[in-house]
Length: 112
Image 1 (cartoon, one colour):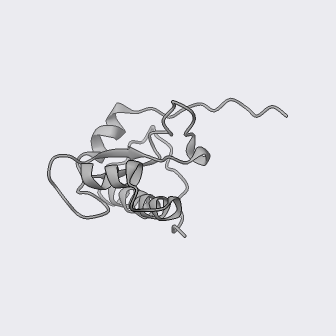
Image 2 (image 1 turned 90 degrees about the vertical axis):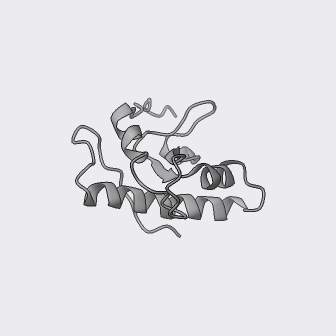
């Protein structure tokens, strides 16, 4: 059974907008906030391939590291924190009227 090839969403503009927000997990505004891509295959993550750029959360270096390499959290906890931060990030960019018109808004729902 062949699946259609995924067309990845890439946007330098959107990645820059993520850096304008404070960390959507801890609130830190220390100059280290970036768009932290989802690590979930359902969002386009693949072996050596980042998820779509519209599947990011604005996270500071500390929170990003904790989610990506943190051994103090299990997978479910990491996915929950990223998911909550992702929803906050999308909602905040939309609230500020900063979401780029040419980038599809991801479907978001409350994390588990």
